Image (cartoon, rainbow, N blue to C red; front, side):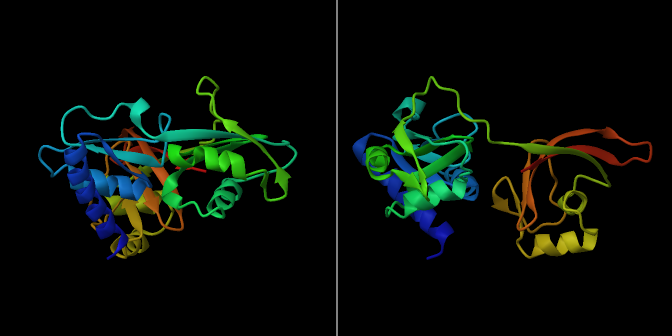
Length: 249
């Protein structure tokens, strides 16, 4: 069973369990593709309610809550804990360093949400059930000593999302036209990437080169980067579309 089919099977199990227990069933943390697949699948299920949350607004990895009534899980009900790591800011630690250390403890990737890293501090969102275990077990990330504590939600989160802003002109809002501009590649080579399943829109694979892109869509091109279509900002005198793009760094 491939990963997508395994996820839909887990969703079906979650629907059954939620109905039996009369309590939300949680799955995840899910990545962007898994979230898109899950929400697409659940949108076809009558009488099933669902929501997602990752511990803070605009989180990337999120838990999926499934319920059998319209009392969708509130944010406070999600079993999410947050851990604050403090260390000497002279040492440059990365997301990979924190993730690798936690997974070396035998923790599965789906139990770990976003990890926000800045100079001298990181905040990791994890399933509540493993929070205390992580705090007890980790004293170092690599060779760097760290102090761990439960994150106080009154503390500001590190700002970790950075973008490069660009404006392009394209012939149309077709996917191949926009990929050609943002990567950049020829229209023909962009079409090849799309047909090979290398391009995702809002987390879902799209192989249709003429797929119409809308404002706020997120386009990921495997090996090339991730881009948000911020807005279509008008037309040029020659009748080409102007698009404002944010490229994730």
